[in-house]
Figure 1 (tube, rainbow, N blue to C red):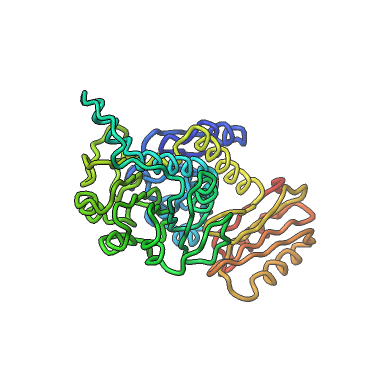
Figure 2 (figure 1 turned 90 degrees about the horizontal axis):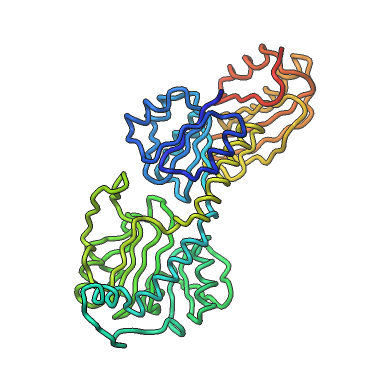
Length: 402
C-alpha cells in the first residue's frame, strides 16, 4: 500500500480521506526536526504538515520517491518550494479554509482591546473590583487600518464595516476595495489615519522586519495593534517599548518568531506580562470548523493529484485542471525548454499510440504536460519518456500495462 505521514495533529478527516483512497496513514501529534523527519519518510509517498515542520532540500533529497507535500495551513514558507519543484514534488496548501476563523478572532480582539477587558479580567481574578469606563471605547466609528488585503484582510474589512468601523487598507498589489473600504497609497498614510492597525501579510522573505519602531512611531497615540500574520514581520522589542511608553494602548499577537515545538513547552517573549496585551499560541485558524475544512481540502488535493495528475492550487508546479480518464494517462514534469512536447508526442507515435487528450502548462523553470493515450502504456515508452534529458518526474495514471 502507498503510505502517507501526517504530522502536527492534523484533523482526522484527512486520515479518512487518504485511507479511503488506499493509503496507509500514520499520524503524529508533534512536529519533527530534520533528522527525525528524514528517518520517518522512509517508504512514505505523501507528507502532511502544518507550520512547524521544516521541509528542507535535504529532507527532499532523502526521499526521492516522495510525490507530494500537503501544508495543512495557509503558509508554505516552512517548505523549500524551489527544491520541491526541482525534485518533482507537488506542494498544496489551504489558502481559504481558515479565513473566517482568523477574521472572527481579529474582530474579537479588537473589541476586547478597545474595552480593556484583559485588564478588567486580570483585576477581578486578582480580587480587585475595578468598575470603570476609563480607557474603554466602542469600536463603532473608529478607523481600522488593514495591512495586507488578501483573503483574510478583505473579509475582515467586510465584517468590521458591518460593525460600524471605517476601513482603510494598504497592499503592495492592486486589490478591489470591498464595501466602503478605502485604499491607502502608502503604509505611512495608513499608519497616520488608522486608530487600530492589523497585519495580514504573507510569509514572503521581503516582509521580514516589516513593522518596527519607525512604524509604531507613525501610528496615532493610544492606537491598538494586532499581528495575526507571521511572527518575523514584527519587531517585538519595539512593540514592548511602545506599550510601556503608552503610545500604543493595546496589542494582540498570535504569531512569534520562535514558537515552541510541542504542547506544554515553555514560551518566552518580551511581551509577557504587559498591560492590555493579548498573547495567543498561534491559534488564529485553530477552530474545529477550520481544521476540519483544512483537513478535507488539502487531503482532497493530494488524492486528486496522485489519482489524476491535477495540480489545481499547487503552490510550486504549473496549474493543470484535470478529471478522471478511462484511458491511460501519464504526466511529465520537465524543464521549461522548447521542443519537449514535440519529443513526447513523437515517442508516443513511435509506439503506435494516439493522443486522446493533452494539456501543457508552464510556470517559471518548469513545464507540466499531461497526456491521455488510446491504449495501455508500454514499458518501453515510459522508460523513453523518463529518459528525456528535460524530464524531472514521470507519473503514470490509469490501467497498468500488462
